[in-house]
Image 1 (cartoon, rainbow over the protein chains, first blue to last red):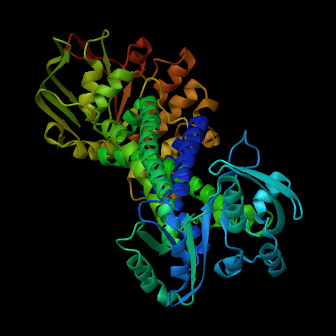
Image 2: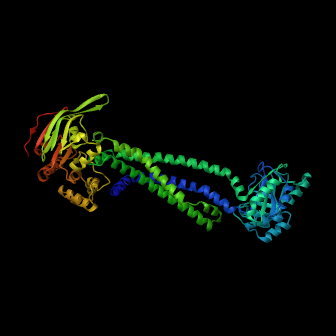
Image 3: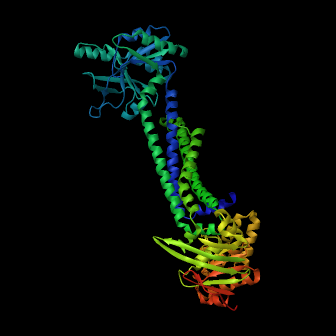
Length: 390
Length: 228
């Protein structure tokens, strides 16, 4: 078969525009499939890199929207193995009321922030300032950048949940691109509510807990949930990684939909490639008849035509694979270099498995698209083809 | 070399059955240049296809180069054609993406010859038809007469005993037509090939050994023609 390769190659180069367009379509689709295939593992890797293995989260068993009694926090803090715990209570504060809530803002306990998120690298002096100043706020780097704020600025947020607007002074930065939070002291909100409504803040949204050892985490999860079982608000405790995965569950469903759509795109691709192969065969009825006349057997005609479709598809698939590979490597390099915001995208990696899957997809497209036209051409009687042509 | 006994062939065209050959009996000796002539639809090309192993009769016997063609499978017929028959068509039918040499080499891809040997034989065939210097030209760079010469080189490159030609001068001007007829004549005279040619070209009479006339699928008595 190898000696026919130059002949097959020249046939591919016969209509360069059509070959280029078909190859490009296959390359684009294979690149898209490759990138999408990196998503599940990539998202998992991102979440694993973000999550601490000694940090757990406690929420209402009924769901995130339901609060927990604030008294739970001290009970959790009292458990053996708990190094620190803090609460998150969603403030729903809008800097510009017309634009609504544009970054997540929470009321928290300033004393335990540095311990619970010690891996986030908040400067000690800024943590100290946050502890000391009742109206102080720690703000994520991206939120600072997006709003043009800096440390020392005063910012007022109007809550969309509580009947208060609070003015804050930014005292520190959360130096993470992926943490756009705006944290302020829970006591500040509690006092404002008491002043406004006569009732303080007696609940929390989420409790974050730092555990002393990773080995103790599983036990502590069960202990906390057991402690509040059959209470007015049962809890659901999980690791930070598990919590993030649940939170991203909807996104994973979205990825599944994208993968299904990608499958359909691949199927369309088969039809496009099959149409190209059919056109190519139709244009060469006379030539194929001549090949058979001079002694090319049916199987050989079939094989050369199929090889043509497969070669076209494999070239497209290879180009798509290299494109996807280049893109993921570029993102990784960009994330490590000039654009740290792209850092997490470095987790989208073309693994050897995806590499092989992409090549098989290209092979599959080539085989499927070439099979029917090649089969038809190989079975056609030479005499009838010659009669039709001549 | 070629024996046909009581050969009939009917085609279906829609609901109609068209009798292309009607109990044709014909013998062609080795090394002869034979013309099949007759009006359009008389069955000339059908007879040529059957002789060349491209088509099968409905009934009758066909023995070519000692082999009974109707008994062969499709693959056996393909092998038979590759070994025993060379083809020349009216519209040359060269592969446009291959050079003249590439076109001539094509039948040799079916052999076990190495690349160098295939190249050498192709150039030899092109030399015979007087086109060695045009070996690396593509068909669109050749005149009609040159393309037909390349087609003849392709037909003889695997050294078959029989060359079949379907209207080989039909798409050529008078000068080129005569040159092609002379070339086919030379295949018989100089290389001992048996050439069977379908033609409407009256000039062929001066070059062939025998003319067989067909009309409505029936073979008339052979008219012996003197060689020019």
